Length: 185
Image (cartoon, rainbow, N blue to C red; front, side):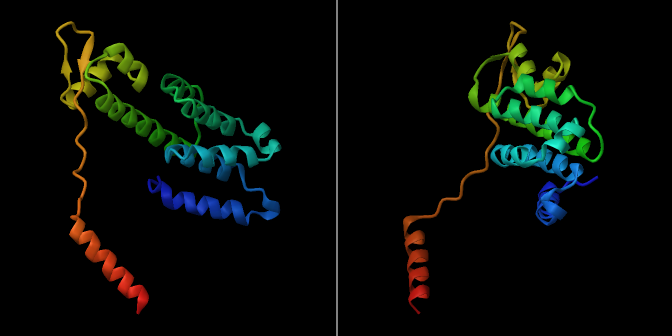
């Protein structure tokens, strides 16, 4: 199973560019479309969708199913995204990418919840993550989020972000001076 999707993406893009008659294999298109969604590169996914030949789309139902997921992501419809992901029986090698995509979308949803809410209903978390109530409660415990006394709301804590590296103005001026001096010599 390939997990380095950036490398695979580069190979698939190369395959598409070098394809005879400019038409790549359905597998190439399907994997590339799924990887663009995994990378949250919705613009490239949409452009790829537009350039896939109609005969490939009509003979390979998996590719339109991948794009159905992309459309939900484009509209920021998380609940619809999980429905679209579950609506199709994915085949290899796309299924690996789709599983990783689902995990990544879910992780982004949890991070969004943690950053945006001080209190949120469990039902909303269920809709935003596509998980069962038990799985949501376990995920909340794993993240050390507080379950409110009413049993229906969660008080998330923001995810820890690495501290940004700040350089002093003097350091920046020194680096700029070195760079300009390098360019002049």
